[in-house]
Length: 184
Image (spheres, rainbow, N blue to C red):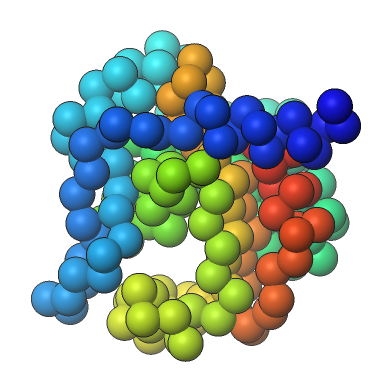
Protein backbone atom coordinates (compact mmCIF):
# COMPACT_ATOMS: atom_id res chain seq x y z
CA UNK A 1 0.00 0.00 0.00
CA UNK A 2 1.36 3.44 -0.87
CA UNK A 3 2.22 5.75 2.08
CA UNK A 4 -0.56 8.26 1.40
CA UNK A 5 -3.24 5.55 1.28
CA UNK A 6 -1.81 4.08 4.49
CA UNK A 7 -1.87 7.48 6.20
CA UNK A 8 -5.52 7.96 5.23
CA UNK A 9 -6.33 4.47 6.50
CA UNK A 10 -4.64 5.20 9.83
CA UNK A 11 -6.41 8.54 10.19
CA UNK A 12 -9.76 6.90 9.56
CA UNK A 13 -9.19 4.00 11.95
CA UNK A 14 -7.61 6.00 14.76
CA UNK A 15 -10.10 8.87 14.80
CA UNK A 16 -11.54 10.19 18.02
CA UNK A 17 -14.57 7.89 17.78
CA UNK A 18 -16.50 8.04 21.02
CA UNK A 19 -14.85 11.13 22.50
CA UNK A 20 -17.37 13.24 24.39
CA UNK A 21 -17.61 16.61 22.68
CA UNK A 22 -18.81 20.11 23.43
CA UNK A 23 -19.70 22.92 21.04
CA UNK A 24 -17.44 25.81 20.16
CA UNK A 25 -19.07 29.20 20.54
CA UNK A 26 -18.26 32.88 20.22
CA UNK A 27 -20.28 36.07 20.24
CA UNK A 28 -23.18 34.12 21.71
CA UNK A 29 -23.37 31.83 18.67
CA UNK A 30 -22.90 28.09 18.55
CA UNK A 31 -21.34 26.88 15.33
CA UNK A 32 -22.08 23.19 15.45
CA UNK A 33 -18.33 22.56 15.28
CA UNK A 34 -17.11 20.51 18.21
CA UNK A 35 -13.93 20.37 20.22
CA UNK A 36 -12.58 17.91 22.73
CA UNK A 37 -14.44 18.25 26.01
CA UNK A 38 -13.85 17.55 29.67
CA UNK A 39 -14.64 13.84 29.38
CA UNK A 40 -11.82 12.86 27.04
CA UNK A 41 -9.52 11.72 29.84
CA UNK A 42 -7.91 8.93 27.80
CA UNK A 43 -6.87 11.35 25.04
CA UNK A 44 -5.52 13.81 27.59
CA UNK A 45 -3.63 11.05 29.45
CA UNK A 46 -1.83 10.12 26.21
CA UNK A 47 -1.01 13.78 25.56
CA UNK A 48 0.27 14.38 29.09
CA UNK A 49 2.33 11.15 29.09
CA UNK A 50 4.32 12.65 26.21
CA UNK A 51 5.32 15.59 28.45
CA UNK A 52 5.52 17.83 25.38
CA UNK A 53 3.39 20.81 26.41
CA UNK A 54 5.31 24.00 27.18
CA UNK A 55 8.64 22.56 26.02
CA UNK A 56 11.24 24.45 23.97
CA UNK A 57 11.29 24.38 20.18
CA UNK A 58 12.72 21.22 18.59
CA UNK A 59 14.12 20.95 15.06
CA UNK A 60 12.03 17.88 14.16
CA UNK A 61 8.75 19.72 14.80
CA UNK A 62 10.03 22.84 13.07
CA UNK A 63 10.81 20.64 10.05
CA UNK A 64 7.26 19.25 10.04
CA UNK A 65 5.83 22.78 9.99
CA UNK A 66 8.19 23.82 7.19
CA UNK A 67 7.34 20.69 5.18
CA UNK A 68 3.61 21.37 5.60
CA UNK A 69 4.15 24.94 4.42
CA UNK A 70 6.16 23.86 1.37
CA UNK A 71 3.94 20.88 0.51
CA UNK A 72 0.72 22.88 0.67
CA UNK A 73 2.07 26.16 -0.72
CA UNK A 74 1.04 28.03 2.42
CA UNK A 75 3.13 30.74 4.05
CA UNK A 76 1.91 29.67 7.51
CA UNK A 77 1.98 26.14 8.94
CA UNK A 78 2.03 24.84 12.49
CA UNK A 79 2.12 21.83 14.80
CA UNK A 80 -0.33 22.41 17.66
CA UNK A 81 -1.02 20.13 20.64
CA UNK A 82 -4.61 20.21 21.96
CA UNK A 83 -4.99 20.12 25.74
CA UNK A 84 -8.21 20.40 27.78
CA UNK A 85 -8.35 24.22 27.73
CA UNK A 86 -6.06 25.30 24.89
CA UNK A 87 -4.08 24.36 21.87
CA UNK A 88 -0.39 25.02 22.30
CA UNK A 89 1.95 25.75 19.40
CA UNK A 90 5.01 23.50 19.39
CA UNK A 91 6.23 24.69 15.98
CA UNK A 92 5.17 27.32 13.46
CA UNK A 93 6.58 28.90 10.34
CA UNK A 94 5.42 32.16 8.83
CA UNK A 95 4.62 33.77 12.20
CA UNK A 96 7.79 35.05 13.87
CA UNK A 97 7.70 34.43 17.62
CA UNK A 98 4.62 32.19 17.38
CA UNK A 99 6.18 29.10 18.97
CA UNK A 100 4.76 28.58 22.45
CA UNK A 101 1.56 30.54 21.82
CA UNK A 102 -1.77 29.24 23.14
CA UNK A 103 -5.33 29.55 21.83
CA UNK A 104 -8.37 28.80 23.99
CA UNK A 105 -9.94 25.49 22.95
CA UNK A 106 -13.27 27.27 22.37
CA UNK A 107 -11.63 29.31 19.59
CA UNK A 108 -9.22 26.67 18.30
CA UNK A 109 -9.56 25.32 14.78
CA UNK A 110 -7.11 22.61 15.84
CA UNK A 111 -9.41 21.52 18.67
CA UNK A 112 -12.19 21.24 16.10
CA UNK A 113 -9.86 19.19 13.88
CA UNK A 114 -9.04 16.77 16.71
CA UNK A 115 -12.78 16.26 17.23
CA UNK A 116 -13.67 15.52 13.61
CA UNK A 117 -14.40 12.01 12.42
CA UNK A 118 -11.33 11.04 10.41
CA UNK A 119 -9.15 13.78 11.93
CA UNK A 120 -9.21 16.12 8.93
CA UNK A 121 -10.72 19.61 8.74
CA UNK A 122 -10.54 21.81 5.65
CA UNK A 123 -12.12 25.24 5.17
CA UNK A 124 -11.21 26.88 1.84
CA UNK A 125 -13.02 30.17 2.61
CA UNK A 126 -14.01 30.80 6.20
CA UNK A 127 -16.14 33.83 5.32
CA UNK A 128 -18.44 31.74 3.15
CA UNK A 129 -18.65 28.82 5.62
CA UNK A 130 -21.57 29.24 8.05
CA UNK A 131 -19.66 27.34 10.76
CA UNK A 132 -16.79 29.82 10.78
CA UNK A 133 -17.84 33.21 9.37
CA UNK A 134 -18.52 34.71 12.83
CA UNK A 135 -15.31 33.34 14.40
CA UNK A 136 -13.31 36.20 15.98
CA UNK A 137 -10.15 35.17 14.13
CA UNK A 138 -12.07 35.52 10.86
CA UNK A 139 -13.92 38.77 11.58
CA UNK A 140 -11.08 40.54 13.40
CA UNK A 141 -7.54 40.08 14.59
CA UNK A 142 -5.86 37.49 12.40
CA UNK A 143 -8.48 37.74 9.59
CA UNK A 144 -8.16 34.03 8.80
CA UNK A 145 -9.67 32.96 5.50
CA UNK A 146 -8.52 29.37 4.95
CA UNK A 147 -7.51 26.46 7.15
CA UNK A 148 -6.58 22.82 6.64
CA UNK A 149 -5.43 20.48 9.39
CA UNK A 150 -4.85 16.77 10.02
CA UNK A 151 -4.80 15.16 13.46
CA UNK A 152 -1.66 13.58 14.86
CA UNK A 153 -2.77 10.29 16.44
CA UNK A 154 -0.80 8.53 19.21
CA UNK A 155 -2.07 5.36 20.88
CA UNK A 156 -5.35 5.73 18.96
CA UNK A 157 -5.90 9.21 20.41
CA UNK A 158 -5.84 12.48 18.42
CA UNK A 159 -3.54 14.72 20.44
CA UNK A 160 -2.25 17.34 18.02
CA UNK A 161 -2.65 18.80 14.53
CA UNK A 162 -0.42 19.63 11.59
CA UNK A 163 -2.10 22.58 9.89
CA UNK A 164 -1.80 25.32 7.31
CA UNK A 165 -3.78 28.56 7.31
CA UNK A 166 -3.76 32.07 5.95
CA UNK A 167 -5.52 35.35 5.30
CA UNK A 168 -6.60 34.68 1.70
CA UNK A 169 -9.19 32.10 0.64
CA UNK A 170 -7.78 29.26 -1.43
CA UNK A 171 -8.73 25.83 -2.67
CA UNK A 172 -7.54 22.94 -0.56
CA UNK A 173 -6.58 20.12 -2.87
CA UNK A 174 -6.48 16.39 -2.32
CA UNK A 175 -2.68 16.72 -2.55
CA UNK A 176 -2.78 19.24 0.34
CA UNK A 177 -4.91 16.84 2.40
CA UNK A 178 -2.58 13.95 1.58
CA UNK A 179 0.52 15.96 2.55
CA UNK A 180 -1.00 16.94 5.90
CA UNK A 181 -2.12 13.37 6.60
CA UNK A 182 1.34 11.97 5.85
CA UNK A 183 3.07 14.62 7.99
CA UNK A 184 0.64 14.00 10.84
